[in-house]
Length: 356
Image (cartoon, rainbow, N blue to C red; front, side):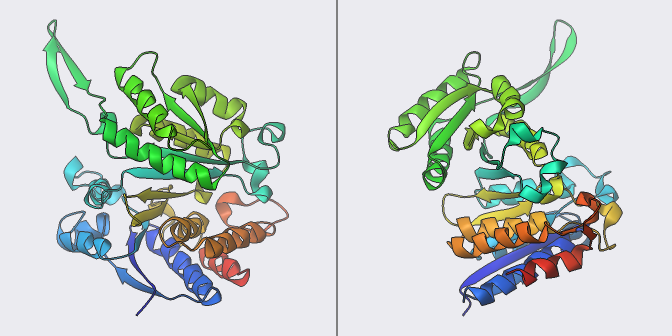
């Protein structure tokens, strides 16, 4: 019996290509660190619509729940853009998050040394190293609150409700504090407590949870100031914990500091070890099948999987070090610079394996 069982959701567009390279790397690192992996494939997104008529078949949910972790490529594409919202590929992504209880989204913003020149932020601001982890609450807040339309003073109006319960804030706060204990023991909680009642509850709850982690330094920041400080002085941050809508915005901003969306991994976690790991970029159907996609975000998502779901930080460290080494000399077209060697998707996977 294998040590770990992984469900692969290759998805649409470049999804199958980049997942195949990530599997190649996972197989190589499993040999080096003496563990075994068993794979099972399932359908999600546009490919699921084409095969079954729905973006998230029940069989996919069952396979994911029976696995130790899930690796996702990407979903969506213009082929399915005309479909109603609940039938589009993206509905499958929201559905699998809900079905697996994935309430915590981890979005690292990391700059690998060889890619510093790709960042729009000046070198003196970035410094020698940048490593920020944004912990975003994923299943509550305004995206899941009550909403509707009505008429106000004779004209159409719409409303959305931002609401959090204490238990929702407590569980995401504990994820963030546990991460901080493994990093630099520093957390910034981001809210809008000067205006929003939901943010006041958020801040009160985070403060209370912080008493369980006396070693961790906690500070608070309003979301507008945090957006400014991420550009002005990103090195002041280590772990950022925030709500669904604020995390959505801030994580995209932080991702641009790293210079390339093709390098950024993410994890969505439940209360246990089960997690869904995916690159943050889209399915890029315009380059699908051309062997030019950048698989590094998916490969780095495997590193996150090893660290947070499978308990193999040694293997995760090895993958990240291998990626950093390859980037010193080789690049896919999206991150190519003169004097570097341009390679395709398959060759990039092979190169990372060669460095393990």
